[in-house]
Image 1 (cartoon, one colour):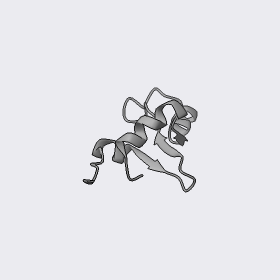
Image 2 (cartoon, rainbow, N blue to C red; image 1 turned 90 degrees about the vertical axis):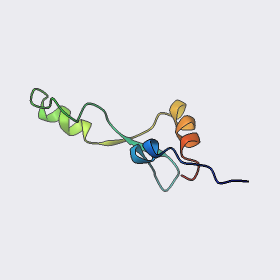
Image 3 (cartoon, helix red, strand yellow; image 1 turned 45 degrees about the vertical axis):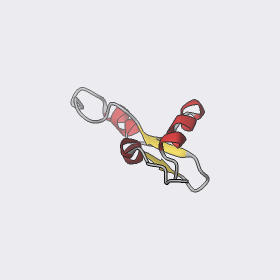
Image 4 (cartoon, rainbow, N blue to C red; image 1 turned 120 degrees about the vertical axis):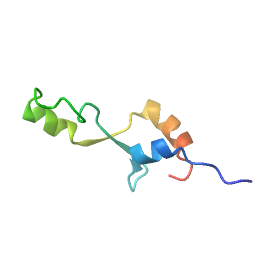
Length: 65
């Protein structure tokens, strides 16, 4: 079988934990930050688990994750 190609855009956005869960960054933290409260910006800085309904699509994009 030929090697499978990784979607490079997905590889830059997602990471796997040791137990196999897929982690992602939260949105809305790249610009227009001056009017957002500090609490909200701190919460947006956290890394969260990808929803189980989306995880299968991410795994297809990252065959060697």
